[in-house]
Image (cartoon, rainbow, N blue to C red; front, side, top):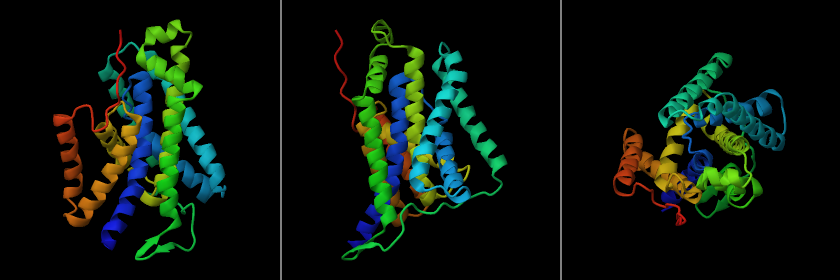
Length: 291
């Protein structure tokens, strides 16, 4: 039983990071209908920003958690302005290809700048762990689980309740109707990419101490983020949270009880089952009926 609880904590820790990454994907897709395969590169940039801020420049973590996500969000908005805005009339496949190659370009550029393969980042919180009977709960585990989920919920609140989110929801429901209401497509799309990039930067910061900082982090996070988003329902923000947590738990359990080769196989098997039998995901968002 103790082993199961320890594994569950580990699964929730990585699952919270997956959930935060998946929310950023879903926000961009809901607002702009774009599928962002460069999302992993933005997560990677957040991790490298954390490394530079903490390890190279000696900034306190609270400043890093403010500066880095905003910087990654601005980079995402600039990418939308310089590249995707000029391809807005292109077909969906062309947009996907552009984001794929942009993510690859970002990863390779980082590989050139940072010669070291994997860089370490100190944990945010250190100190005596909390002992609850047979469980040893580190402060870093608490921070990652609680912090990543709270940041994800904050992103959901912005999209669902804030004024900026109202514009994104209107654009998602009906672009022409949103324009007639006075919303600018250019402004709303830039805001959506900024919010998605900000969440990606946060995911990178939470992932850096746990997974290390390397160009491979882009692939290591984009695949689970997509799987979590699809499991939860690609248009469901709450589903992204639950999908990320479920995926993190399942990956941890399979890695503990099955041979290592089964870890990724089981993840993609779950994805295949969901797509075959529940294509809208396990937690689809209720769609409003249009008249």
